[in-house]
Image 1 (cartoon, rainbow, N blue to C red):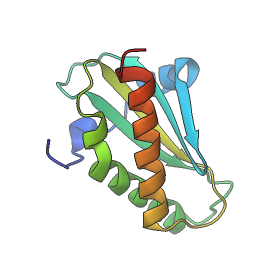
Image 2 (cartoon, rainbow, N blue to C red; image 1 turned 180 degrees about the vertical axis):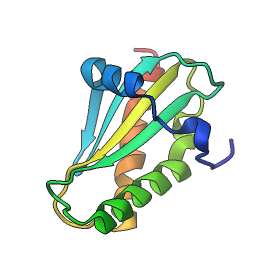
Image 3 (spheres, helix red, strand yellow; image 1 turned 135 degrees about the vertical axis):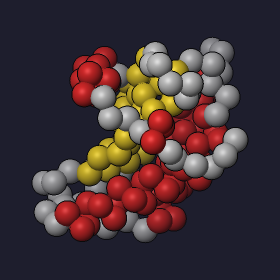
Length: 125
């Protein structure tokens, strides 16, 4: 699987976002939380992903954008963990910390969250 994060994989649909937050399940490893939902969409991608950072904790857009870049990059490098899904999912990564994270922190937390997701949703119980 290519380690890319192209336009088709980005979660942009307002309808999907509303459904995700109203019906989605959650996995958390502080300071990152994953909200996910099984869904179906036209494109032939398995997972559509979005990232979000609270304006309350980070007033400056520069800081929010940096954290979002770190989250996207961490997901891009580790999405091979969830590559063997049989269903389509929507993901939203939320950063809820109050201090600027290091890349190593975001990568380790996202890797842990994705592994937890695989144990919960993909592997048979």
